[in-house]
Each structure stands twice: as C-alpha cells, then as structure tokens.
Picture 1: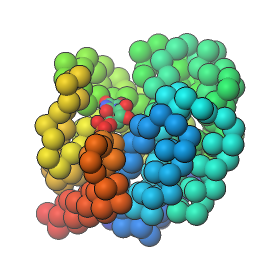
Picture 2: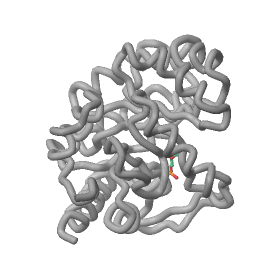
Picture 3: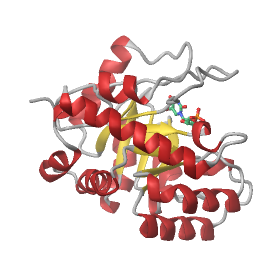
Picture 4: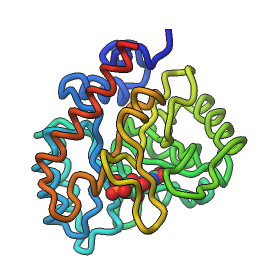
Length: 260
Ligand code: 5BU
C-alpha cells in the first residue's frame, strides 16, 4: 500500500526519523497539513502572525533574511510560540554552495539557523557534498533537510533528470526527510513532500509564481503539506479566517485522498 493511502498517524508510528514522527503526530493532533509561508519584514509582524495563525498550522515557514530588525530574541520568542501552539519551524534558506560553506552558513553567521529551525532545505546543484556538509551540523541537533526537487515558479529548471537526481540523493542520505515539489516522488523511506504555490483562487503573481489548489496537490498528486503565504495574510485578508479555511481545505483534500 502506498504511503499516500496511509494516515499521517500511521506513517508517524512507523517512521524512523524522530523529527518526522513528531511532524506527523503534530499534523494528526491539529488536523492540519498546512504550513504558513510568513514572508513579512519585521520582527513584530512575524511574531504577531505566528501567534495568530500558529494554532492552525503544522509548520511555520520563515525567510529570516527578510526581517529588517532580526535579533536572537526573535528566534527565542518564535521558539516559545512553536511550543505554545505546537508547530515546527522551517527556514526556507535554499542553501546552494559547497559543503564546507553551507556548514558555516547553516550553523553560524548572525542567524544560526541550525539552532532553531527544525527543517531547512537545499538545492543539490553543487552535488552530494552539500547534503553532507549540512548533515554534519544538523544531524547532531536532530534537524531534517528537504531537497528542492522542483519549484513552483514559471519556467523553473528543476525537471526530468535533475528532479530524479534529487530523489536518488534523498533516498541515500539519512539527513534528508523529503522534498519541496508538487507531488509524491518515491515510496522509499516515506520521504515527505511539502508544496509551495498553493492558493484557493489566485492563479499566480506578476513575478512568475503559479498557484494550484489543495485538492490538485494533496488529493491528486499525493503531496503531504501545503505551503500558503499571501493567500492567508495578503492585502485585505483576515489571516485567522484564511488560515482556518486553508487548514480545512488541506485536511479535506487529504481525507478525500484516503477515501480514494
Ligand atoms: P506565496 O505568498 O503563497 O506565493 O508564498 C510562497 C512561499 O513559498 C514563499 O515564501 C516562497 O519563497 C516559497 N517558495 C515558492 O513559492 N516556490 C518554491 O518553489 C519554493 C519556495 Br522552493
């Protein structure tokens, strides 16, 4: 039986990676396969959004380098909100350098991503050394890595043989817990997929973003987690109401998949 036919709870019980076990348990507890892409530019906005939308998401996704007033207190407070509302933190850093450099970028600098982000991601364009470098920092801390097997934007180049290479590298490296992409990629090791570019209405933006619905992504394509940003907090929206709506849409798409 395919993992896409199993419940998140069942998959959590039999998964070998403690972080993924925790993720699936959280998803089941909160009945949420929704991740918020919190692309706001100040500390106050980021923490405000995490406190409001936190109850409805399993993963809170950050781009910490767009916060104009970043400091270490921000990540302390974000970690406290993650505990309060029961979500994991995913820094969407998209590392892309040689192993030695990404080790420095992941563990150090002013952001110290490995100290607070449960999940991060990377491109495999430099070859397998990037995974090994990140693993040296993240594995001792119990973190997990997603590979960018595909992207959501128009004309993106991660296709065909490149995407397949991502899958091979994910299977071979214990630190990898899954992919960013539009679908389930493999039945090996229950590697998860998280999908950005999800919207209930909008078809895209002026800079190449393309949106698909939760049903296309979760029910039809077998992805595990939908990532939604502006659909929840965009101009004129009520973030709590939209988060509830997307949570319900994502969860119903999952229930529909199980019933197929
Ligand atoms: P949006 O507001 O729902 O369009 O935000 C999408 C988020 O997901 C944003 O943070 C992007 O950086 C991120 N993203 C993406 O849109 N597409 C991709 O392929 C990847 C990340 Br990888």
